[in-house]
Figure 1 (spheres, rainbow, N blue to C red):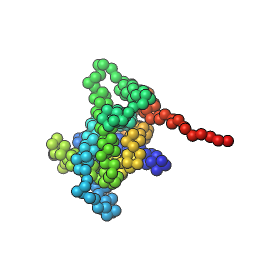
Figure 2: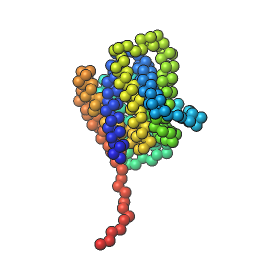
Figure 3: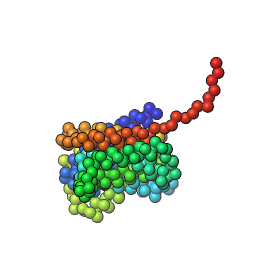
Figure 4: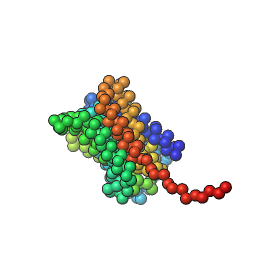
Length: 298
């Protein structure tokens, strides 16, 4: 378990900075271009690893359709929703909503993957949604405000992550971590390129310059390439639920980066919502103690 928790901690630090890099890139480009760059740089670093390791894949045995589904659910679609949400939200608030991923993972598992939910997990889910409600500082008159729209977009991303983690555990568990990471990112690069060509084809001419190269390297190489090697390792060696716990740690580093580097303000509703979401996640992960059948002799 030591390796799993170490990987979890490193992944949380990497993904905490990803919200910062996304925010920086959005100042000069469309969300779909941010997604394409993230996928491209991520797949490039994994391709380099494949070449250096002289890894040969059995292409005729790979589950191509399942890889495409996971690429959509775990990469292309949630990353587009996250980037779009950060045009409405601060990076810190986006990361807090991202912390509801374990709750969505439980719900998706219960309704679509035959997982059973314990009483404490239902309680945790309810508390988690209460945290989102408080976080949004919701008022009926603000239902179409940018804040609420951003929250809905970010919540959609966490729903995608919940689906993607279960799909990868069910259909891709027999693949190596490198295989899953590389081919899902490769598919995501193609999907995001199609989105760019459909929406803003002219933007490709200004894709990379000195101002965006650094954030793209951080977001793609670290936040996508290296991070997904760690993520699929957690799913493969742990579980979908365990891997989703990374979102429990991400908001701390994301809020710190956003406050000191982007001068984002921390509101009371953010902190209260974060604590309630964390409480819900914690309650939902408590496992009942197994009754011991052992007999003791003097």
